[in-house]
Image (cartoon, rainbow, N blue to C red; front, side):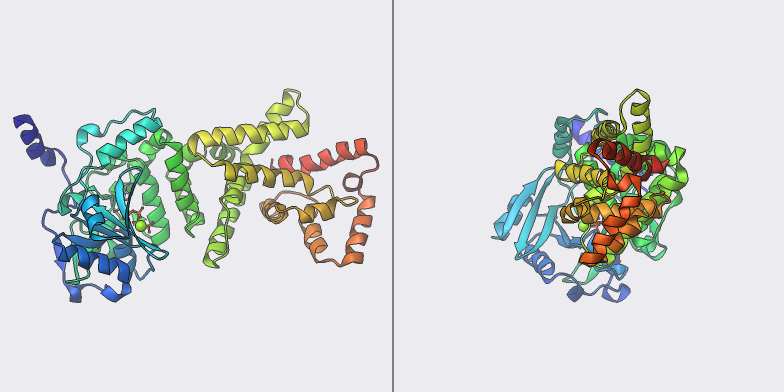
Length: 465
Ligand code: ATP
Ligand code: MG
């Protein structure tokens, strides 16, 4: 008991926390740009009801940060002194959820407001997690994360100063425990506390630093940036399912191109995509161009509110790593087509050990790649059959991507562009004209197969070399 008391007294002293105060800077309504009617009325209503019930409650995190920057927030988070059970007792439409930690979701039609109880930092002794984390280890973390705390604790356990701002829509005051407003003004991502320790506690924070820097067009403050390169390999120990979620956020938030540059620069790309990182070394121009183009297209589609598929993105991120593997298998005597199939299988299996790409995405990745072998083979009814294939569009877009990265395909992309526009007689002519090209028509089945695999090599995998 005494020991416990002593520890709880001593532990804050053991963790020197720069940028965190026990008394916050308080900004009154006239000292900041936030207005309560800009926030989700449901979120504001939840805060009001919790406060009326006698709890502390604030809007917090990304929504306060984004609003201060004039960005429309993705969602609205509430932090409160009420426990999940107490929150549920106040709201009929509340559901306790929790994988990594217990949270409450309050539903208003399609809008969901996440309400979290104030939490404290991991105790420092828990920092050394087993590096070979299994799902059990991850669930071990659940319990440790679920330590409730005071408002001050809650501010302290957050990752970046700009994410630790609390807005009270009732008094219209902002509580700033970590000089977050200063960092917003100076456009800086800065970890709360000792950066090295905070990255070690949770290496995903390195990815989050990059994500916010790219999204907000902020710099990463020097002391928060320096430990990243040496600590980047720690990402290898993060459960692959969590990394999948993080990678989607990194590449599907509309700032993927800038994010990629930063990940490479800070040596965070290697632990996420080891094979692609090797390709970036051996075949830099092609690999860099193909991935950047794919990400720039993705960013554009997101800005235009068009759908994007993670499969296409992963297909592009991994494609430059294929040729070396195909060659290796061919050198061992495997024919080109099985070598391609086997290389694709190996690459995806290996990648999934780092980032758990679900089957619903790995299947279409394979289909997009397979389509690259089929697109050169257009004779007879093949072109029309391909056009009807539900994966045609993705395969065709992928072909154009490869061409824009410098792959030589003998005008295959343009041919398909024309073919889709051609009327009946035009398309018949196009197929007939292929007759002069040995690798696209096919005289007999055996010859066709051999010649088309030659084309496949050139247009597909080997072209990337
Ligand atoms: P956005 O939702 O716009 O991507 P966000 O800041 O809301 O940004 P979330 O991932 O929704 O990010 O997390 C909500 C808040 O929880 C963050 O603002 C931060 O304060 C805290 N947080 C999230 N992840 C971590 C982490 N790994 N370590 C410490 N604090 C975290
Ligand atoms: Mg959020």
